[in-house]
Amino acid sequence: RRDEVFLRISKDELVELFEEYEKVDDDENVALTLVDYGEPKICTYDAEEQVSYERPYLLLDVRSEADFERCHILQARNMPQRFLMQDKMGADLYEFKNVEGKLIVLYDLQERLAAAAAHQLAHRGFDNVFVLTKGLSAFA
Image (tube, rainbow, N blue to C red):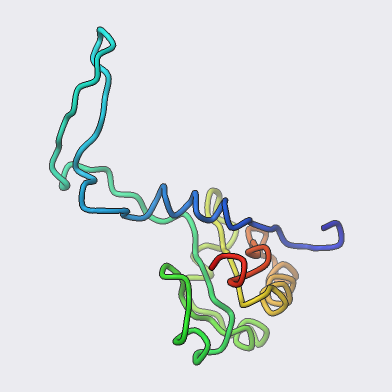
């Protein structure tokens, strides 16, 4: 949307991030690779040998604590919109502020609260703030 000072992320894009950076199941120590002559070969490796990835996103549910407790996206942290509007933000938010390759994703049930919070953060100098399009209702 042209008049917005923040960016948007779709449900599908968020799911892609989860698929890339979240543990999906206990079979992550198995990989499929191709040997030189093109035949598949199954290789296993220890979980301790895996490359460890730090999440490149901070997912914030800006609804009230009570709404968050009832239902939220598993990877989300609760940071009510009223705190963001009053500049009462956690240190982790500042750790992500304008860091290349890092995203701050805000959501609420629809997107009204998240859009207002994202607008406020953008005016405070955050340029990597995204709002989950259509909010939790579209994600569920």
